[in-house]
Image (cartoon, rainbow, N blue to C red; front, side, top):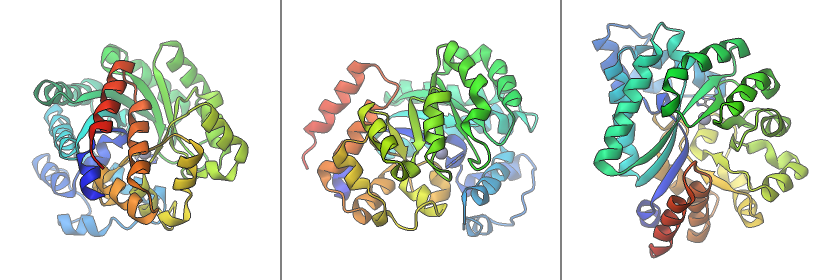
Length: 332
Ligand code: ADE
Ligand code: ZN
């Protein structure tokens, strides 16, 4: 199974660039930029990666990214992730990042947009990796703040495919961002949002109906609403699930309790992703390997999730068909 997973060309639809910031690199940048962190060593920082909920992770995640200052920092972080992606045989990525978390610290939009874009362009040239950039609005901030950053990103509109919604889900329901996502849609961007990670199925419904979400990031709580399950299945709405994230943040106690297999059998469009791999113990292959083992997925079922990853990507049909053909050529 492990070899099969490694050999498959894969897409990744739910990975936060700042969540790929490895502790060693966090410390290098903190020294270089002379920004002190409340941890003395890489080991101390790693030891703090014991989360009991989403918020406990977000606190460390925002703290660590505070050492990202220059365009070169964003370039190097992106290059490091893209190298990892290549090692995992990821051939396409819809890459998330959090603009407001950087502008709030006085970083200019051009600094991170140029750093991230240049690294992606270089990887595309060198290795043929395809990518889309998807800035996410922080849901713990106001809709007004979201509208402000949306306007500030306008000069970079050609580099952006769509927008997402992330950060703390509790007490920050989709309806808070209805007008913002209306603007996003009107400008012709793709829309996705985190929902049903730490809150119930109503957030999934509202993401679809109020925010025009074309994919749901996580969507774990869909199983509490049979009508929603049927709707997601009928409409073929991709769910970008992240098994190691769910375990780390105690969204799931174990993968064997969640009906991954049953949902796949029903035709629900599950895709597998790494979310914040530097924090949750593994990149894309690790997520697939752990899922296959704990949730007892067959090679065919793993293949289905990987094919779904391409079907759900913001890619032209010819490219999707090309990668599905390549996947079908891999011997099981
Ligand atoms: N930002 C980064 N990772 C996240 C997650 N798993 N949920 C919500 N916001 C996030
Ligand atoms: Zn996420």
